[in-house]
Image 1 (cartoon, helix red, strand yellow):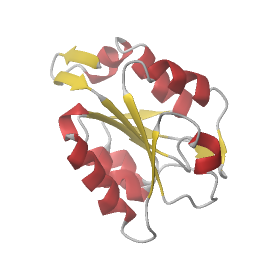
Image 2 (cartoon, one colour):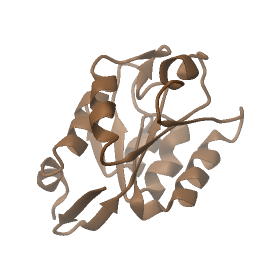
Image 3 (tube, helix red, strand yellow):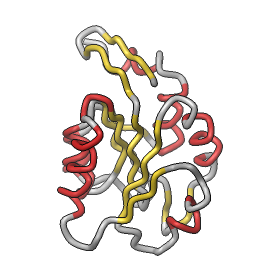
Amino acid sequence: MIELDIPGFGQRALHHLVLDYNGTLAIDGRIQPGVSSRLSQLKHDLLIHILTADTFGTVRATFGQTDFTVHVLPAGGEREAKAEYVRALGVSSCVCMGNGANDASMLMEAGLSVAVLQPEGVAMAALSSAHILVPGIEAGLDLLLHPTRLKATLRA
């Protein structure tokens, strides 16, 4: 668990890290450098969930042998399916990261949400639904590895 107490933002007890796969953890179906090592560190504090429509069919080969929860969504309705997944976990206990329009609802629901700007861009719907924008997944994961950094960005 990661506990936050940020003036003007409030207290959070984060138990789950919910991540979009393509466009967030991976580009063109390939995991970004530095992601695996950061996730390996974070798994000691957070349960890691990877949600994806798996456009490139690579998520199971990448994360199938880990203790992360990989959930491949059926085509169509991904936006609501991601939000429902977060609601089932408990919105206040989730930190979510994503970049696509289909991530906007889960970002809106989350206790802490991070829009990730990668080379394929970030949808305006995701951006406007997030608490924070970061310049890449490594920076987003680093915020969780060093949570005091969140105070500078989120305090009122």
